[in-house]
Each structure stands twice: as structure tokens, then as C-alpha cells.
Amino acid sequence: MRLTRTFYSYAVALFVCLAAVGLFLLMTPQSRTERIPKRDYSITLANFNRAVPYTVWGPAQDPGGWVPNSNRIADGANGAKVLYLGYATAKREHAMFAQSGEQPGAGFGNRMANSDKSVGTEQVNGQPWDKRFREDKNQRTLIRTLPGVTLVVTGTADWPELAQLAATLREVPKPA
Image (cartoon, rainbow, N blue to C red; front, side, top):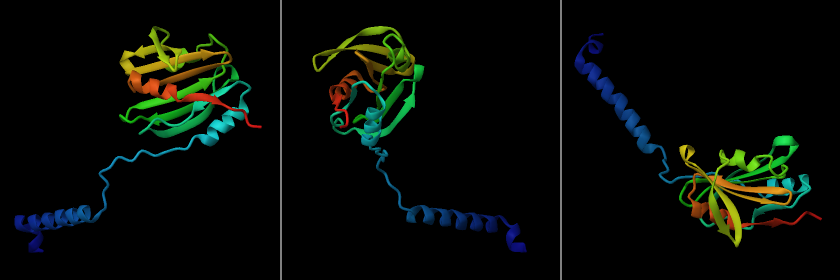
């Protein structure tokens, strides 16, 4: 009983507890490398291609050092389907490719960019893409409107990285 009433006893008990925690931390395996989960989007892209009547676009290959980490199909405005493919870039920023068959002028590009103000154009594979920038969100966006579909590349990545993703986009053939 007397042992628990002295400062020395409390100090010993505290030391024993800290030693046990320290031993536990030393024995527990720890990874010092970043691990970004990779998500294959090939099935999502194929399902989207079957679900929509227009020409679907997708990356011919992922840019070097990029990790595809999300993908989904959602319902957009007026019942239009929207495809989203998310990436962690080589510089560990965020980039996303999205496309929708909303009617031109329906605002899909504006909603994705969080802005309706163009800041110029970017030539990607000889094609002009409209540039948008939302400073308060550090969001850059490239938009290309084609007959029947709007393509959007957006995120916190810098302009060259966004252009790199846009450059990989190709038409995906319809399944037979």
C-alpha cells in the first residue's frame, strides 16, 4: 500500500508504461513511403461507352508517374451520364478527367471549372482547349467542346500536367 503513495513509485510506474509503449512502437512495422491506392478504370470506361450514344474519350495510357485513384459514372444535368477519372499526378497533385454529353451551353464545363471566365486557350495535340482558373480553390481547368460531348481536365495540377493528361485522350471505339 505504501508503494503506491510515493513519488518514486509513480515515477517507476510511469517509466514502465512509457517503456512498454516505446517497445511497442519499435516492434510495429512502419512504412515511410507514400502509398496511393490504384484504381483500374477500364471496366468503368467500357460501361460508360456502352451507356452513352456519343463518342467516348479516354486516356490511351496513363501519364508516367501518375496513379489513377478514382473512377465513377454519375447522373448529370438533364439525365446525362458523366464519367469521372481521378489521378494523383507525378508531382502528387490532383487531376481529373470528366466528360458528359449534356447539350452544348448546358454549363457542364462551367460547373466542373467552378468558373465561367476563360483565361485563354491551350493547344494540346494541335487542338484548342479553353483555360479556366479559380484562384481561391487553386483549380485549373481545360475544356474542349466537341459535337455531342464536352471533355474537361481539371484539378490542382499545374497547366503542363493538365495538358499532359489531355494529350493522352483518344476516342474509345464502341464495343461490337
